[in-house]
Image (cartoon, rainbow, N blue to C red; front, side, top):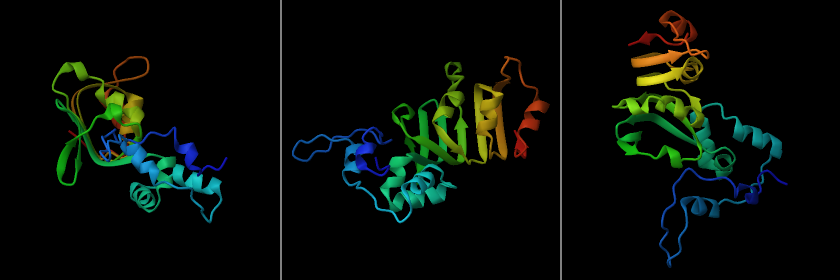
Length: 199
């Protein structure tokens, strides 16, 4: 089966939520509208090479250019590029077109690529694992600034989140080893070589 065959995309869910597409009372999701214009591609390169390129983007700007040029790349590797992802008492928000927009992370089925800032600042103690819960959805962490507040997080999870972080802001954060012991500040800093500033 050809890896670019549109029939193989039916199981892939777009990150976009369902909407009412009011045209002669037809109801369609944004995914269906998106896929309705997706057609089989005939690339110069072999299918295996195109599959590799789609699955291994080098950077977020390159990925965005590929997606804008051809839907194949998004269908094969659905990623949302977010410059800023923030959690507050009002839930998840992202900064887009100079405004903050609420997003329902639970309804997004694609991966997230965060490029600038990531903040988790819940106002109550019932959301102590929000930072950990989002990790499964993150494709790549390119952000330079991370702010965590009122969180419990493992050392491995923090290392993943801090892969590019230069400025780290902690407020009541408990970092633990796999055995449940608390990570000392010295050990923590040793594990985060890119971090230049800790607040």
